[in-house]
Length: 92
Image: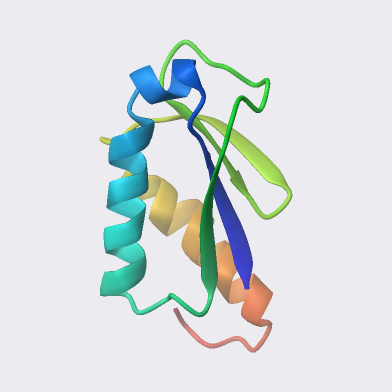
């Protein structure tokens, strides 16, 4: 199980955090990963970026995530983190 935390502080809110949360909820449901991913929000993580939203996946902080780039972020960061957390080598 992994935690995916979306910054919903004022800066990230203005840069698309509500849409990112919506999109993540949809992806988690589509791929039936409700038992593998805990999606939460947080106020400012202190890692503001000029572009995009700050997300924390497990213990790693990522800045600059945009709705347009979320698909790549999902594929390259979140799904591998889920697979690693499962530790069983199954494809996600």
